[in-house]
Length: 133
Image 1 (cartoon, rainbow, N blue to C red):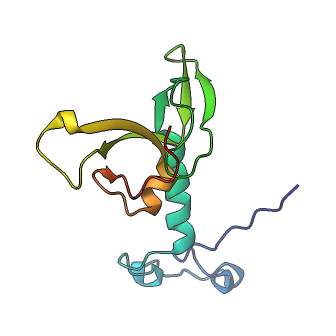
Image 2: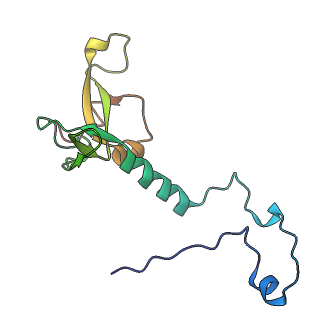
């Protein structure tokens, strides 16, 4: 088993305030500036986003073209279909760069986490693809 750790939330009354039994003015002064992003919190948000991105399973496209690892498959009880977890469909540009012609882009499946690792580009290029299907 692994032991999970939790971080203290800054907006709670400090322990000495509870022990003294005094009333403590609860203000937002203890809350960190919202512009500061906690890396652990950002990772947790990415994990939630990755888990919520699913695509209907297609056995002809069963691995990420960026990392080459197979997608995790699960049965969605609500839809009654097999789906890939942590998966999104992105366009792969066949030519050198984006064009207005949709026929020159192929829809490919990638891990959401791999796509985020590339900086979440609107389209993928052939030089980003490590493993062709």
